[in-house]
Image (tube, rainbow, N blue to C red; front, top):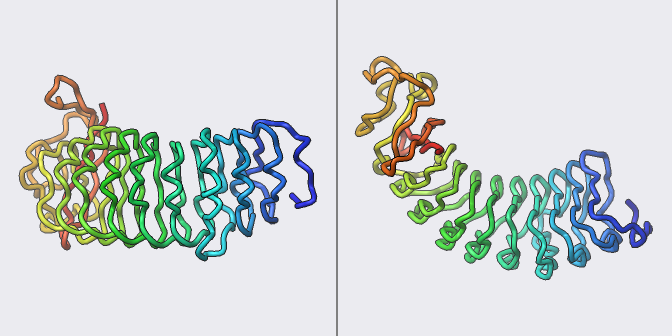
Amino acid sequence: MEQSDRADTLPCWAFAIAQNQFREIIPDTLSNISGLDLLDLGENHLRGQVPDSLGMLKNLYWLRLDSNELGSGMLGDLNFLNSFNNISSLRVIGLYSNNFGGVLPNSIVNLSLQHFTIGNNRLSGNIPVDIGNLINLTTFGVAENDLTGVIPYSISKLQSLRQLDLSWNRLSGLLPSSLGNLSLLYYLNMTHNDFEGAIPTSLRNCLNMELLILDNNKLSGSLPGNFIGEVPSGGVFKNVSGISITGNKKLCEGICQLQLQACSDRSFSVKNGKGKHLSIKIIIAIGITGVSWLAFLVASK
């Protein structure tokens, strides 16, 4: 891909060269491909800055630049995102595992995204306060950066959100109770941050939750009760003095010292109070002030 190449004579809807060995910069001439819907340059060795000219691709739906060497690790690396404000069709942006630095521009909240991932980069600053404007967002991943600040309250507006990964940053403050409003959420990862306070009891409202990871924070207080399912017998659950299952009468198995009932069916169902049944899937551990508490993944229908 050289700057001298002419692409304006190549009308097409998709340009995908993922999983190759391209090592150049992204050429401005890509913006001349008429009618381009999908641009996938992932898993190469592309370097340099992403050109603002990509904002001229008015039909662009899918942009994937994951696993390259793009960016300089400095402020301004994500300025190209500002050029997308006039692309009403854009739904997917994948920027995972590059060298992007700087802050997330506020302009992303004006897009109509369904998927935005930019984990494993060198971002700093805060999550945009108006992130809740992305009401169609189903996946938001910013793991493995250096983000600080609190989770914006507006995140509760993301009613379509299914996957939220904020892990391995320096986010702090309380876990907002409004997370319990995200009824479609099935994956929530906030490990290795500086969150404090109690785990919101509202998380029990996330009836589609399959994986909840909150370890390596500064959480304290009581764990929300009424969990249901099988207790592991390995890892931290080998030591009865290192776990607490107080108030969770519907747990089963685990080590014999816990004196729990046997699990008659590993995928047994329970009623959710509205006549529907929930099939329990996963159990995980959440670290709270040095004690490995048992936390339950609230099941899918």
